[in-house]
Length: 404
Picture 1 (cartoon, rainbow, N blue to C red):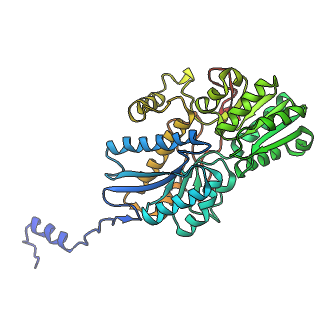
Picture 2 (cartoon, rainbow, N blue to C red; picture 1 turned 135 degrees about the vertical axis):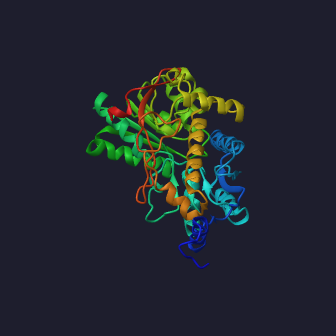
Picture 3 (spheres, one colour; picture 1 turned 90 degrees about the vertical axis):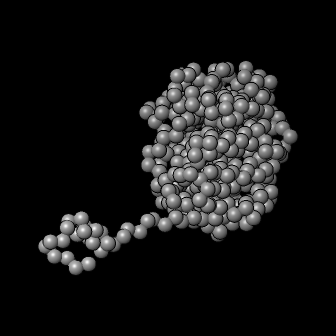
């Protein structure tokens, strides 16, 4: 178009518009399992086997994704969770994970449960560059982004609660005789190491006896009898639900009254304390990072009310008071936030970038003052917990985050 001083303004603007470079719209980038309408994710859970009580975690997460999908999904994409039973058996975990990656072609593995189980697939998933994200395992094995950049847990590590128990002992029973019962795997051994480190040079003087058990053992009664015979006046139990409930019951039945700590993964009233007997559980000390639905202080909390409504509508057969369900609700909420931050770049690489860039993120059912933070060199999102004592009905806080 030839322009002169008599050219109408509208024609001039039109010519300039044609001459200007046209901005290129951001291109969608998808990893395996992602389309314009779907995000496919995978998971293994112990829906059968010795810790099947923990399978409720996966059921809560699946229910949460149903809720999200009803509300429009993630930027219009529905989440499809394929959650497979591994029976709490590492070889089965490997088999099911390979199926999810190679046959189902999921974008990521989310929230798979178990320490030995996640360890059995860690090398494989990192070699395949598949996110092993927000796994449910209280171990220190997962915070190694230099070696395993595709693996990140969500469960607090023993470094969040074991030092709290040691500090409490120093304050209230400085000459304690401590007995340790722990599951004979990385989960149990990690806890013992962190607890010993927290006791420092006093560990040899304070620890009077130790006993371990296998997850497949029918009971831990013999171990508790042996520990009781040591003359210990303090007991720390690191177990899964069945073993913890058996330990609580046997301690009570022996008439043993130690200062009694249980690691936070077995602080569930529904899955552990009720089977053990609430009256037998009075006085237990543990640490929590999440709100306890049985605690009336949260009755008018909007986020608690939202959680209870969610459970009633989307997972009515689940027990809203079960802390494993509270945790599953939080974990699913977290994954949704990370997926939203990915926008249209739903690649495995961007998913890990977003997960490793959490800044003071609050989850709806975390205790006040506890926030998630991660970076490219720090893959431990939750670092703080709060000591609680069980009074026969609920967990009562002994401190707050601000007091730590």
